[in-house]
Length: 502
Ligand code: MV4
Image (cartoon, rainbow, N blue to C red; front, side, top):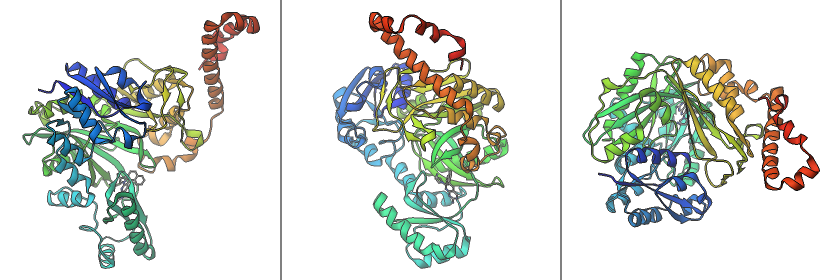
């Protein structure tokens, strides 16, 4: 029985995993870099260990240091979260060697699915539909010519060691193909140390739909429905929702069965995600499998009522799934917005800094997985996502209205955030109508990036609010000096409706 878990991660996911551990009566161990000493996961854990300087390569990616802390703390298991070492097969192997339970799939499953060419080949042999393309690695010009003859242009050249949009090239003209493959191979070699590339037919305007799977160590595998992830910017998901606006019960059953087959083909254990592309004729194709818990898992948790981290821990404990496929029911509609410390008006440049003021939305159907707090200084070293807001309601339209209400309540001053960009998306006709695909943001660029007049007022008000807040603190701190210069009217202004009405 796992009694203590080291969470080898930081930020919102570390806190989220620790919450489930606490509910299960499992001890929690945090690891932190020098930049994360004040971070919430350190405060929340039962124990915390410093593992090195701020850069991830010297801290959260240091397998030796994490193993050392696991031993020192007596942790029975390690939960990797997402990112960092979560899909690092060598880390999973090292845990096994050290007799520490790795909460995730086997390193073999990671390796097979991490290599996009072997993943494709595995899917083909398992009867899971893949995008038409090259059977394997492109070794010479003959392979290219043969593949193009078979599937036609346009094509997508992809790095086998890539994924998530890294190492992809779109080719529409025959004359570009040979040079593009050569360029893709050298780019793959420099980025991943592996120059294997493959070619796929380019699917125009697809939906990016992923299926959540859950498997135990005894071959039981179920799926927990889909997540629509087509609202992306530069291969970074911005909004996810379930159910997908284009899904039908029949298509869900078909895709779900193929997702289960994909997991079974690699003897998968734990939670995993099968990504599909779905074209305008609702034909679907395996894209890749993510062998980790994903950022967007909370929307699946909300509509199914299942705690996915709890299921991960039970599977890691060697317990058989108690859930059967027929037990899985999706209720209502959930939408997740990712909140980033970035400036949408400045090409989403990261906006590190100190949180002066934060008010988080609450109310029926609102969940926030976050980790920042008033006075927290957001480090520059890590992903700028500061929280995820997940809302649920009975219908998609109610969920959109609830997300709008919640986003309008979300107040963070001291840094720039993507909140107002998210509010624009929630109001975009294509989104409201559920008529969008992976080109949504580029197709709605004007609507999403034309500043509205009240934006600047809202900015001013936010600035006034933070200034007032700051001044109230100053008043509290040094009333004599401030009162003599500013007198009392300043505090009244802070309470006048017309100034701070949002
Ligand atoms: C594709 C594709 C269309 N055709 N492959 C994006 C990241 C990784 N998951 C694979 N991705 C895609 N692969 C073929 N054969 C479309 C995507 C894709 C995408 C591509 C460009 C810009 C945004 C995108 C968002 C989702 C999926």
